[in-house]
Image (cartoon, rainbow, N blue to C red; front, top):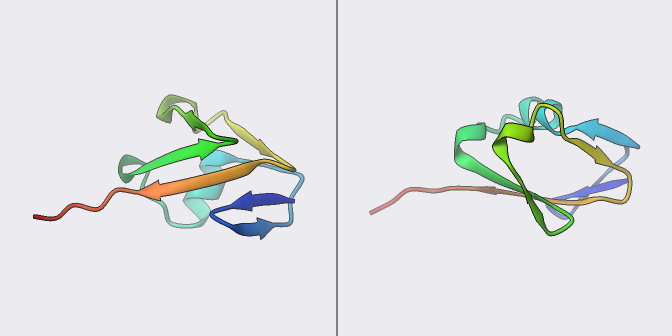
Amino acid sequence: MIKINGNLIEADEIKLADYLNENGYRTGRIAVECNEEIVPKSQYESFIIHSGDVVEIVSFVGGG
């Protein structure tokens, strides 16, 4: 199981880019942390999330 933003996902592994696309995230407006380490945007296409990983996806919000 993988924990993403506090929700458990039943998967042994998933490619980060696939998860982001399937869930409607716009990569230009987010930051991703896996096991308390930032994942560089340049690695989203190749980064694999594994069972037991804890992932946080943070969206940037503009305002004024």
